Length: 163
Image (cartoon, rainbow, N blue to C red):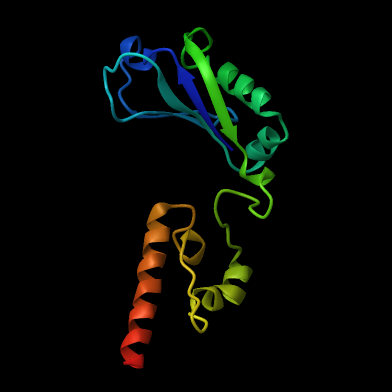
């Protein structure tokens, strides 16, 4: 589950001198991520108000979007007393509630990787898959990029052999 929270102003910079980075917490929201751009801008700004996985994500996914935002605001107030006063709008996304997705990224068990990974990453006729799911660096853009490079390499080798 991810939560984006819009605030009337960049109070974390103006009041708390926080310029980018992440505040980690043992609360269900797990973290608050501050933008690393647009420093000292005037007007509305957005924070990543929560990024949950595991049991906390399933708990939040069972809530309505408005309930998720309310819980994130209550937990964010622990860090910033201005949270609720400066809050303007919010949005949340629960991957486990999206049909056919079941989460934000792949999580291989050792047995599943041993059984299926090689077939997943091997070109089958004209089909080759790429993405973080076809990488040992799951859940990260780096894994998707490494997987894409592997897929392009397979395509290139196939094209060289065909000519």
